[in-house]
Length: 200
Image 1 (cartoon, rainbow, N blue to C red):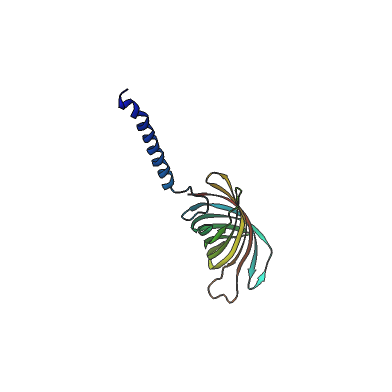
Image 2: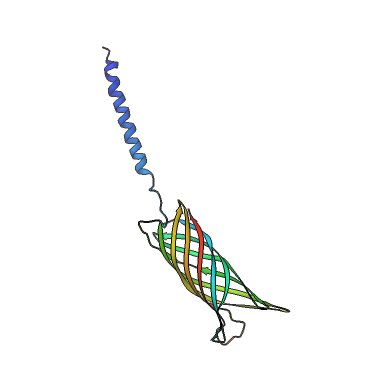
């Protein structure tokens, strides 16, 4: 029998072995699949917030009022679970009697996301930034602004592969002082929010 016939099985086995080694090396070189909260992950989305607000005028608190807010969000994970976020253009519109208040909020939002073995990710988030508002009354408009800080806590539930339902409770201490004010004016705001984010 010719030598080439005997060597064919050996050659085929060698080729299969080399292909297997090459494939295993290729798989080993591929980066592991990222999970939500891994360093370098972006989170984008926003939420709608139902708020109960308590006005503060010259240090004296008033009655609770209610309104809605729209809060866009963008975040970036610097280390596993630790996210640097921002609400770049939160808008709040509230009407009471003949006065309409239109607020613009820019808030930094560092957060920590806790890994679990389920689709639910609990999180805590700090909030700090600036709120400016225009108080519109018949025949006049007053512009006020001030420092805002607070926090949010809740859960993110992965309902689809890269989509997260966000539910949280939020408190903000909002200062809205006109020029020359001697004591704090603004809002103490407690709210429940629900929103949607995607991660990349």
